[in-house]
Image 1 (cartoon, helix red, strand yellow):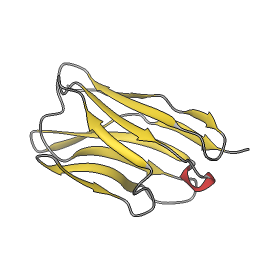
Image 2 (spheres, helix red, strand yellow):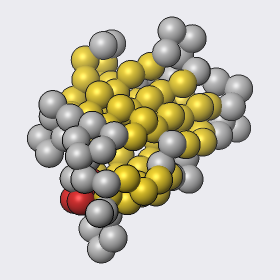
Image 3 (cartoon, one colour):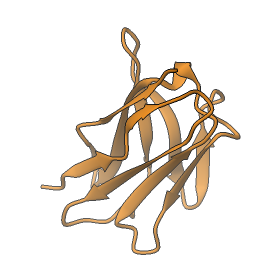
Length: 115
């Protein structure tokens, strides 16, 4: 069974940057949709950035121009570069992969944006 593990979260000041990574055990990120989601306290999980088909990417309006999703050439690592972070970006960030007809989620990594 494929397992996803996120890393790179932490505490950062407003305006700062973080880079999240997600690796998959015994699999690659070859089937879309593949992407990053987040869930803030008291809110529902929302899409942040997703490869929806081929190289087509969708971003949440709130992160456009600040966040960039990418896959490495081996398709084993999914990344999210987050710049100019804001307090409202505080959430648990989850990686999602698609394997067959199933979605697989990582356990999440906490991002806190605070001064």
